[in-house]
Length: 412
Image (cartoon, rainbow, N blue to C red; front, side, top):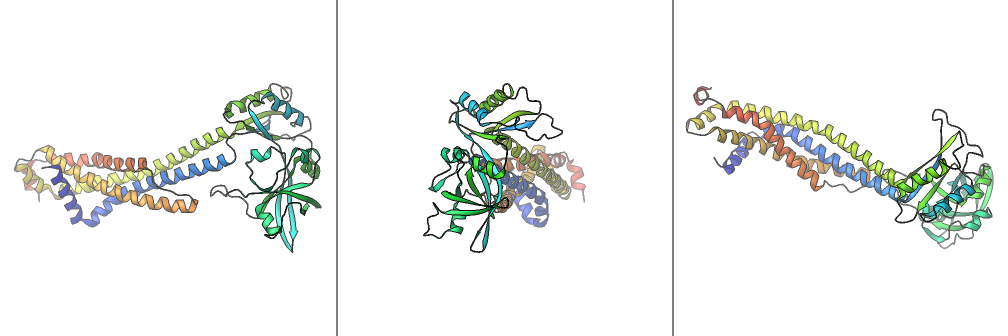
């Protein structure tokens, strides 16, 4: 019997027993669909995490103080913190690799009252290099300058969202004064710039009720009455720099120099490049683990295929006996039942791909990300379903092939 005849017989058998065939395929459909959906959504989530973290600046390096006694966190004192002189010396040391140093101080949450409405702002003190650190796009005016920082000016760079709330379309916010209720004091700032709102991420949502209000870092320290030093700062590396290596060099520079005699703190630095790599590895591991769990349903589906094929062998025992009596070889009988098993799994795999694509699309809508099954996942799914058909169909097929023709003809 040719392969075409075996396929034709298999399809005829499926059509003749529609409900049984559907129930048999159900495990394969659910298993393949789950794997397709999980891998598709997993890839979308990985891409989203990569895009989000990259938007923070892939060439950025975070440098921070870490307590040597991990069990009890030590409070900073003046001798512990990075000073402007320490940071400037480090910048000079690695001047061929460093593009800018980002300094920041959180002055707290403020509130602006305008026309009987309150607007919440997060007052963040920054230096002039913070513009490149956080990839801030100025739409009007300018960003904080070195002169603003040195003179501790009360100037501010506000978001487009806040500007549209406080000023009409025909008003120019630049040069306008804004009163902010900050730390129970009413502070007045002059607007020198307006920045574009960054795009929101489905995984990392920003607070829609509060916008950032940038002021000079020295002004923020005065308003918050904080110490002169810094517990952390950001480094932006020049293009082409090995950020992971530079992060390690900066860490060693401080730990083997200024902080060598510090018994409370040591310096830890990490590049965003390495953090993205760690995030990719973590997301890949999670997706793989969930896919393996979902793949267990494929095993259950395969057992269901084996079970129904054994039933089919029992029901067609006389047919097998007749065919063997007419000279059919064991290999022909075996091939017929293996092909039937493969057809069941192949059709189940196709429906599973459609089911998985549908589930993935729903997940994509929730994540606000386009999700589509990859060619590799479809190929693996179809190949795996065929392999299941061969593996779980072999035992019933082999049992049918070994039937004694005389006993088979006597079977009722």
